[in-house]
Amino acid sequence: MSDIFVGRQPIFDSKMQVFAYELLFRAEAGPLESTIKDGDSATSQIILNTFVNLGLEKIVGQHKAFLKLSRKFLSDPELLVAPPDRIVLEVLQDVEPEDNIIAALQSFKQQGYSIALDNFIDPNDFEPFIELTDIVKLDVLNKEPEELAAHAERFRPYNVKLLAEKIETYDQFESMKELGFDYFQGYFFAKPTLIEGKSITPNQLNLLKLVATINNPEVEVEELSNIISTDVSLSHKVLKFINSPLSGLRTEVDSIQQAVVLVGLKTIKNWIMLMALAHGSNKPQELSTMALIRARCCELMAHQCDLPKPEGFFTVGLFSVLDAMMDRPLEEVLAELPLASESKTALLDHTGLFGEALSSTLSMERNDFGLTGFADLNLIQLSDIYHDAIHWADERVNQL
Image (cartoon, rainbow, N blue to C red; front, side, top):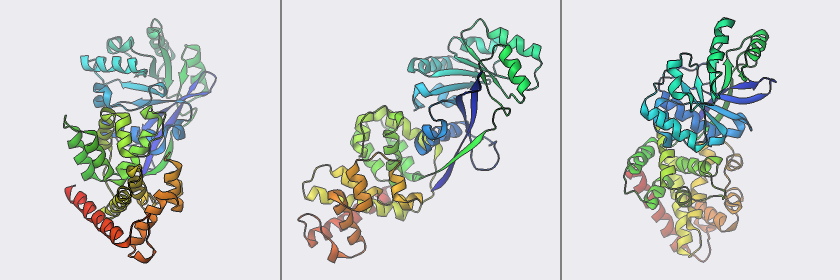
């Protein structure tokens, strides 16, 4: 379990209404500034925390989000997994107009993203990018009015909006409006604020195995979903991601294999690479092993009884430890996952077929076989299933 943070600073229009929020990397609570040692990791962390762990709505509501991209993300558009209509991608001043960068920006534009240039002043710097640009951000702090007027005039022939950043006084705000700026940001309006939350962290060994697997061109859907299913934290994040606006799906998904099939290998691969850039691990392996035993036991019961959706039984068993994984009440965690109602009821109340399978598994876990029962399975069958589940879970843990 780890604390997560995303900084944000509002961007206003000329009527002082919020237009968007700029997302800022924050490694910890406390100082508003965080030193970025690894731009790729910082960008990955912001994307994951915003769109999966915390949720875009919690951070920016219905507004747009400005997101600075590291060179890796700029040069490989397929890595970015975010809703194009909600995002403005920022190109930093030190980015050179190389052919692959220009091609990437063209791809982003075709997908529907807006593009912002951050503090490009010299025409030689912004000319290669300008046809692809929607917004130009200019730092107005400690700049003379004549200098700012010249910068604004330089961009006037282009079809772009101007954003004045680092505004610290009302007079600056009024001056920038007179110069024709469209958007405004700075301490005069609001300092950056910190949005906090908690995130379950995937096992690093699982992530490494996933990275190796997704780079195999012959990887199959079943193989990939099997690996994801062996880690409760990965499974939780995948389902949360799949059921978020990022995936573009309009149907609820409550099993890993269904998620991989519906979204496609390509999208899942890109998302896993994003996770690999951002995450480490912090929970004991024993908890994950217990989750695997419960998941496999529930699934084997379903198979033994020829019940439909055995993968749903697996998910219920796997997610039965989410409260321990996330140090939060299970009901609160499940509220973030649009699981089928029968799955949520099974986890919270142990009712329905899913719930009965979980209850039986928990009884066996406590060595309370006298209270165990599921469908028409007898005690010997249940005992065999439970020991098979232990053996299966141990094997998976050893493989990883």
